[in-house]
Image (cartoon, rainbow, N blue to C red; front, side, top):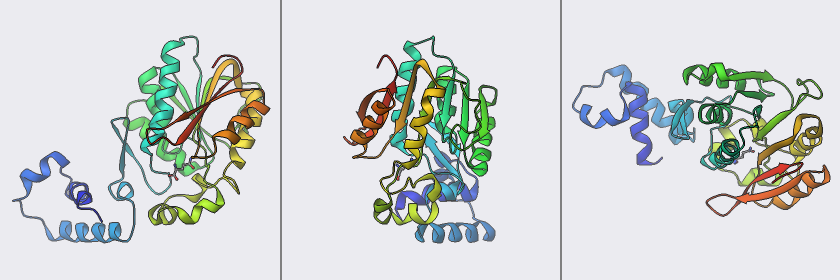
Length: 263
Ligand code: GLN
């Protein structure tokens, strides 16, 4: 466990803001709080991710609620949001937005907050949608967000189209599973991570549904893993989409953008 994890654990257990912890170190800690701190430190040492202990994770400078029902938001997913915001800012004609595989809801929530669009947040997991809804309420975004429990587009009327579909679906390949950090494997929902033998089973199903749900002038943005770019671009192209690949700050293939027309 890193020393840096101690401060958030203290802050959470004592209900004192992180910035105020250092000036409150002279205060007496009650027995119960001391026991709580010990328990939480042990949990962290056993590998439980810090975000599940403190029940929060920052994404795009906002703090969101998380628990074991959702994947912890990753900093690299901010790229997906940045790209969506850049397109939406330039193209005022693009109105309807979908966040597919919303999980904790941070992608749809942040797009709604910063682009002022309404966003439909979709997930197959009712537990994840509970978390996404809570985040919607807590952030004051509830009016701009709608939630739908659905296996990909199965709950969407055929022919209902969106101008922007952003998706962070499971894409970890089976052979990569063993190499993931123990904290991830033991604590995060595998169903939000695993995408079959090459990781692309779910994206293959998803891309096939786009002709019915992505508008003519719309954009689809998906997060991928390093090394999947070529295959995903081919997948897009086989459905008639133009595809462009983007790397993250670490130089890893991270996102594919698709459109029927422009790019
Ligand atoms: N990037 C995630 C990881 O850390 C994977 C997210 C996903 O499968 N959508 O493993």
